[in-house]
Image 1: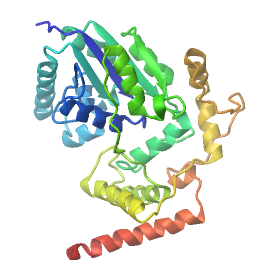
Image 2: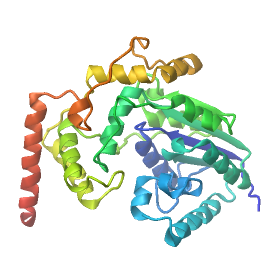
Image 3: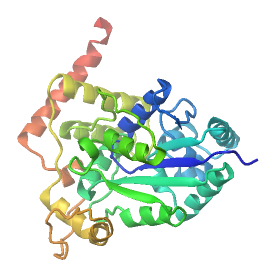
Image 4: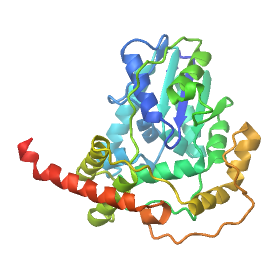
Length: 349
């Protein structure tokens, strides 16, 4: 059955480009009836559409939050996927303008993009626009470490770290002719933030007039240097073999560290070592130059990309890549005391 649909706007939020905040706004606007003629499908009560990756990806490549719930590619998991697909089709049936948002779309391979296109073509979309946001590679690397160690005891080495800007674009452009690349930085975004910027793109595509909410609650806050040190050591001690899997206790610790850091003012913003930044930019020279030539996005920050940079000594420690000070060590000790105090006095709360 071909469904009578027309326009689809697909938002691809690559690593740490404000996707969670944006999705919360889109979901809230939709629930309040403030999305004009646009339908924002709600699948399994999620504010995003990342679960759609299960329709085209093998089990071993799906998001870690889904794999945490479905450890095996068994009948239970297949039933989940089949139900999701049916729910997706019924959710968008009869709507002319549809908007999807997910970070994991950026991980689709060429074949997975092709398979996803088949699915949406069968649903009747005849006009599709893909919007992808890219963040500067060093800033992205740091943010990905912060996210990674929440569910792993290891993270990527800067000696081999690459972000495939060009590949992501070309994978989607191979199947969709309208792929827009936008730079994720305050200077480049409309009004300096992701929500205003994406709503501007949305209104132009659909011919709508959606208004940005006055107040926004930031989501998915980053970890401080001290919090990164604590959670990394916790994962190493208790879950050394469980990479990319979330557990309730480490989730609780992450949340508690963020809360205490904020409440007690124990904040130390993590910064990469200069040698690490130079190394990452050198290793990503080809893609950085391509971005500048193709879209005028300059992520070189004045670095000499032609100057060879030696690898660093990397032993999978946060200390290997971050600048650390005496203050960071002191804040780490204070955080540990505050966490101990919290649990020792739980019965009094």
